[in-house]
Amino acid sequence: LSGCGGSAEKATPENPTSTESSTPKGELNVGAAYETTDYGPITTSALAMGTNWEVLEGLYQFHMSDYSVYPALAKDEPTKVSDTVYEVTLRDGAKFSDGTDVTADDVVSSYARTTDDKSIYKQFFTFVKSVEAKDAKTVTITLNYPFANIKERFANVKIVPTSMDADALKAKPTGSGPYKYETISPTEVTAVPNPNYNGQYPAQVERLCWHVLKDD
Picture 1 (cartoon, helix red, strand yellow):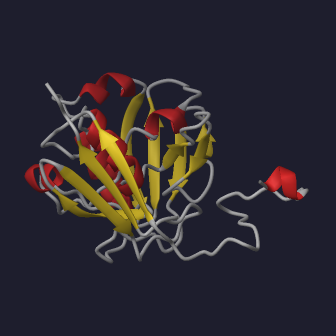
Picture 2 (cartoon, helix red, strand yellow):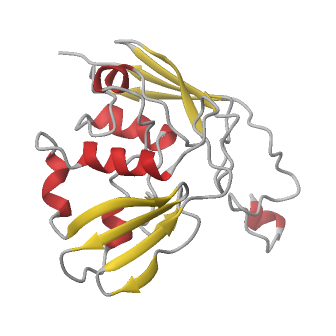
C-alpha cells in the first residue's frame, strides 16, 4: 500500500509514519503446536523461548528477521578496556515490569543462572572468565581469551530480577522487555504492554495471545 501511494518514507519502530499511533492497538493471536510448564530464562521450550523474546531482554538482542544484533538492556556497544576486558553500561532508567530498577547485580546473577551446570547454555560461554558488577549500572566482562562475538553470545543471557527463585521464574518470569506476562496457563499465554519499558522497540499491540493447539 505504501508503494502504491508513492510514499518514500519507510516506517520503522524508531521512525513511525505520521499515520501510525504510538498507542498499542488490537490483539495478536498465535496458534502454537507446543506446550510447556517452564517459562524460565534458560528454558529450551520453543513456546516459552518465543514468548520470552517479547518479555525478557538481554544486554543485546537479535533482530529475528535477519539476526543482526542491537543494544537492548545495554546502553551502547561494549567498551573495550583491553583485549580481554569489556565494560557494558545499562540503559538509562531501565526497569523491570514490576517497577524495580534493573541493576548490574541482576546481570551478574542472570549470567550465573545461564551458565549453571544444568544449563545447556553453559557450553557457549567458555570464553568468559568472569562477569562482575563494577557499579550499579556497569558490568565488567573478563574473557579467558579474545573473542569477537560477545554481543551475540550475551543475547542468550536474559536478565531477570535476582530476587526471583527458579520456581517463580519457571511459572511467570518478570522482565524488562516491551511486554509483560499477563496470564500463563496450560492452554494459553497472554502478554500486555510493559508500562515501565523505555527501550527503542515499544509494544505495538494491546495484547499478545499464544493458544496451545496440540493435537495427537
